[in-house]
Image 1 (tube, protein in one colour):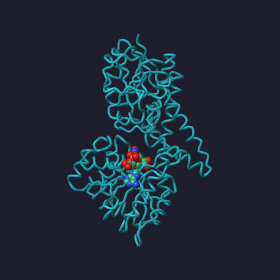
Image 2: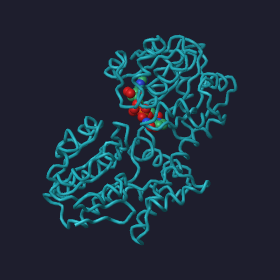
Image 3: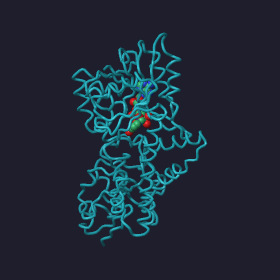
Image 4: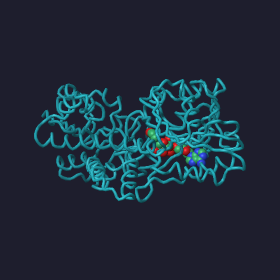
Length: 437
Ligand SMILES: NC(=O)c1ccc[n+]([C@@H]2O[C@H](COP(=O)([O-])OP(=O)(O)OC[C@H]3O[C@@H](n4cnc5c(N)ncnc54)[C@H](O)[C@@H]3O)[C@@H](O)[C@H]2O)c1
């Protein structure tokens, strides 16, 4: 089938690449000229494992093209997928300006009948608004059908998640349009659930809000574990073995971040307010998460009393491993708090350094390696659980530090390796500290 994808971010690019991989003819359109320039020579503008190989294979096979021109990109396309950003607005609602502009771009440039699929995460009712925009600006005699198709991929495993999704949601009020979108996804061999448009829109927000609440819940339990002397790792394992609970999303840490959970939870809360529904569980989910982002700094303050002029290494800046995405990363708040308290911060991340520099700015020393970050520091804070950090030689690391004090915000260091160190203070989350003098 001939498919256009509008927006080549984490979602649009992964979708475009995977649809071309299963044989469709795909053109991805983006307004960002630099992104399209890179993509046209087979370079991915985002860090996503596996994406660049697939990108090059499908460009070479002639199935995947990139352009900044909506007119060229939409030519002959039966299905047009919108995957532009819907960032958080000032009042917590989803900002729909990119989506609305994309709808105008489509309707003005479309010269034939087509189906528009909204993959961006949008509040309930948005598909109706977009339908009106598409109809208002469309060329005479053109029919545009709309389908809601929210995306559930996770950054870091976006290709795997798209090729082997748990489910595909197709929300439509038009049987023929729904069938055509189902046909496009058929080669993926993934279970498909057909719903109304409004239910499809809600499934996405309800799923993210549920997962975010699960994280805030386990973080609260971890705080209680510390207070009562229990171990969150055992507690989470014991809870997760219950099929009704499940093992995923029970890793205590320093809170969720990224481009989805924070904004989607707030957008759902905004929708609840609009409809005068008091969703107090969501308010608490957000509040707990904000507190949890501060927990490493609170622990460091408790240990040192005063952080002014303390040299502190931060390992991990991206909001999670295997991505270069810094949106809503807990590292931002942690660094802001530390520098505000007068600490000297040295930061290192395997792939997110460039994005981090843009967001965090000056006032932090950006190290080129773990070793450069930790040399002569008073404390080490592990903020993102990259495999590189799990594999560190801790005996060597602790020797390089001025004071071998480690705060592990992701419980990613092995207890055995800590116990092998000659001299260390180790503060995990929700587990007893280890002090070897
Ligand atoms: N990132 C995720 O993990 C994820 C997962 C599921 C759902 N989502 C949702 O998917 C949507 C996209 O997220 P993302 O992270 O891929 O966004 P992103 O910010 O990485 O990319 C959006 C892209 O759209 C482009 N764009 C904006 N307006 C355009 C226009 N009129 N025409 C063409 N291109 C345009 C931008 O230049 C940018 O490259 C959001 O609604 C998000 O909530 C994201």
